[in-house]
Image 1: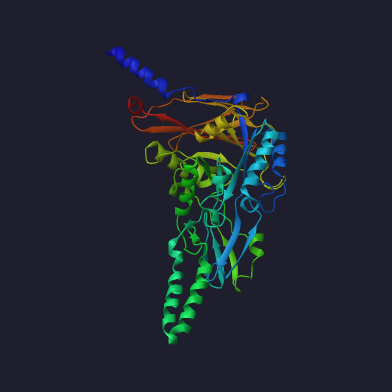
Image 2: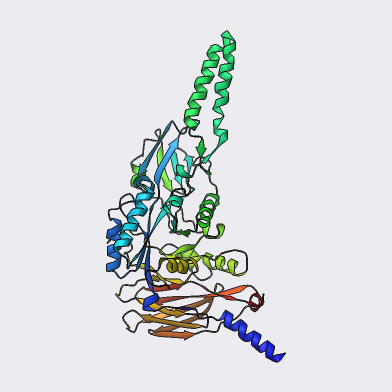
Length: 465
């Protein structure tokens, strides 16, 4: 009996404490996420220019996320589709998703050593609100990054402005009743004029409602909480795609060109653009792939004990079906403006040039987020494994001071100051039930930073099952 117990314990530990994530030069894919090309309004770089620049900076993969649709419209009730004003600017859907994906594919063939993934930055929902003598456009900049879909599936993203995703609504045929009623009145001479009136009114509304389709959530229905966003997340997930919350802690109340170009045209009303920070979406939605922790997602979401830890803990305890991973985004539009192309990277543990393995590594959290400091050399997470090993070095082998923080289930377990090349051993505790997780942060003196994705440790009870 004692031998059996010993064998069982060894089996459990071998299953729980598996090899972990080991990064080597051959299995390190440096990736830039959230890049805008000339398919986005105000941007001038072609896809090939971006890929060429990325290669020159030592990157191995780029995930393009041009705006899927930049279209804002406001209509007067009850003829909102006829009596309306708005603006539409350059975007993927405006240029054609097939063209966008085809160009990305051509560039991929020209640069086989790079991975080129086309995606979009989308505004799933926006809504209008009247305040005093001003129209307010709410939540236009509440964005999700979507990639890993085909062009055909991308074109049907369920957003407020994307007519390709609108559904047939038989209720919009109601004006036919007015037309039929009008013809019935022709049987009475004294009602003919009223019948003509009904036919005209019915005809006008038929034109307004044509082609009798509508979005799941329109811009006049008011605040809808997380429902429009969960709808898009579920759609992308059903097609095998990725969804990442973009800049969730950023505030956007500026007067962009899309706003100033239509100011004063909305029936003598002013126009305000309002998108406050939206960290609450992290806990209000589920089954999304990840969160942009850097740059605009660390203060209340990514820090120890923040909303990301809450989401991870909910997954570990069985409340959520899927974990959500930390991503880094650049929101790159032009060199010299904002974050550099290689300023924030997702360092993925997969074979270089292997798209399938790369996507699987992203899907399972086998990557970490890297923020470059002011020095050319960057920290490299060589190992963070489930047997308790941590190894961090500098890309040029130099010695640099750093502070490493180990976090377990949302609580700081250990803070260690050291010098690269840095190594640390921590004790992995197997939980009695469900799962627990470990993650780490490493901060360099020059501002460089590493944020790992979590290692989940299953309980012995789960393994026995």
